[in-house]
Length: 194
Image (cartoon, rainbow, N blue to C red; front, side, top):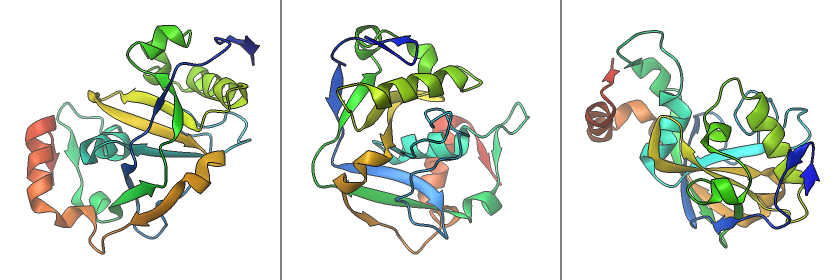
């Protein structure tokens, strides 16, 4: 099946998302935001649909929202000032979402490879995302491995899946105040939080 010039299988290999996901976001906005900027990996290249990014774990949310930012240094220094503008929310789905599996055996089955979730710039990833969005299977989004920690699984939800989210739990504290977790992140990723 050719969609947007991308050769996809007639039926996508899919997987179900967890019911609880994590998302790091700007402290002044709701975590339930489907962006249309075209700035991120699986955004629509023509801003024709929105995408919400989340992860299976807190660490996955951190690498997707914070660690992926380039510091220009050999040692990654994460600013507490930056972390003071972010919160970690829990997103709760009413039922699992059916996602195109772009990790593990889903890569070959869906006619792609790991470059789709790691290549820069994002042009190819975004074209692939739009093809998946237009596929007859009408998946809710994409499951993929985080580029900066491939042990972590991230989820890119298309805006048509907005009704799956029952609620979100957002703490009053910003990320810079969770000292114990920040120490764990420094050890895990060899970063400095300053």
